[in-house]
Image 1 (cartoon, rainbow, N blue to C red):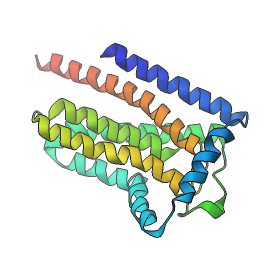
Image 2: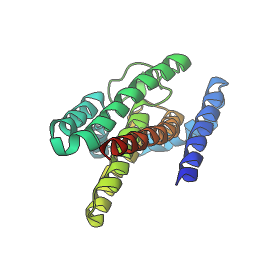
Image 3: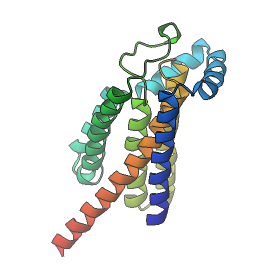
Image 4: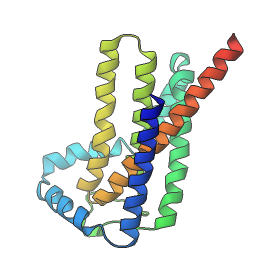
Length: 209
């Protein structure tokens, strides 16, 4: 397991660095443009309304509400609320720093289907959903003893994790490489947070013993 996590951590960082280099040097059009053209070509009113709901699931207001709910209940507070809230706060601050470093402008405003400001690289919705929903999946797999229920929750949590990022491209507020970079960096951050969570759990068990 440790080896697998190490591979995910390294692969995420390497992919992010590669995308950052290509972005800074202006060599991402070959990747971004064909995907954007196809995504924009399938736009229609019904799909737009569905994806608006999905993209708003990655907004800070929604993530904050999720964290508050997890913190409110005693059964979910320590196991879910604290690690997820801490992860969400960290990744939000971290991504803002990343955006200020690279300062990539968003796609042309005429392509936006929703209002969005700030810089584009990397996608905050993508990195946040990777960390928050990815961490929830890890915690569900760890604590939910009923395997059928755990599997259902895993699928339910994986849907927003994947589609929030894709919705950002559809909404015209991110380049595909922004989303991919967010997922890559988010995967590395997620692994780091899981390692910290496990170390904290081990220390807590030692104190109890």
